[in-house]
Amino acid sequence: MQKTIIITGGNRGLGLETAKQLSDQGYRLILGIRKESELEATAATFKENGTPVLCYQLDLSSSNSINDFVAFVQKEVGGIDGLINNAGVLLDADSPDFINTTQKISDNTLRKTFDINFFGTIELTNKLIPAFTKNSLILNISSILGSNQFQADAASPIYEVKTFGYNASKAALNSYTIHLAHALAPMGIRVNSVHPGWVKTDMGGENAPLSTQEGAKAIVEQVRFDQPLTGKFVHQDGQFPW
Image (cartoon, rainbow, N blue to C red; front, side, top):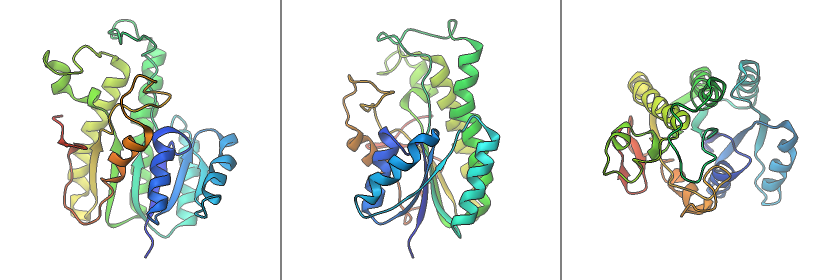
């Protein structure tokens, strides 16, 4: 039976490339896209490849939008086999030096970051859980920048990258992964955080070493229904410390 996977932020960058790779593997996809004006063009991308997907407007900063998206999913599919929480923003890092923004970030920017990267993602996920099938999975797309252990270690490769709003939101998302994995274990639903790497996207910038294809592959490799791994922070080479 064809498995159904939801991807948020599915119209560009890592989300779109992840969708393309999963589509090639035969998965049925539902893409959440913030801008309604981009729905048709995104859907057309897959129709050209002979694999149509369902695209629906989703703004994670809006409870009304989240509710509409959940209602759409419940109407269109009988059950969900996977959710990839890919949508996210980095609003406090416009400096090439990645200066410490802890004292500089505005309250508004910090709240906007958490609304999408944390609160909206949690609201969507919790409302979709009743539709999940047994042995399904949730992948929260995180970042090495959300590892508190690496952030505290002066010898780590990301020690100087103190983009506070983004880093803190990903650390919070990682905590959600740990707690949700524990809560859903009796239902057979696996939950993991994934670090796809530093990728050339609008967020990652041109200096990033990985292509979107390489970053998406790291995500797609975690779409497995035959292994028990849950409550972990994973990347291509293994696992990261929280």
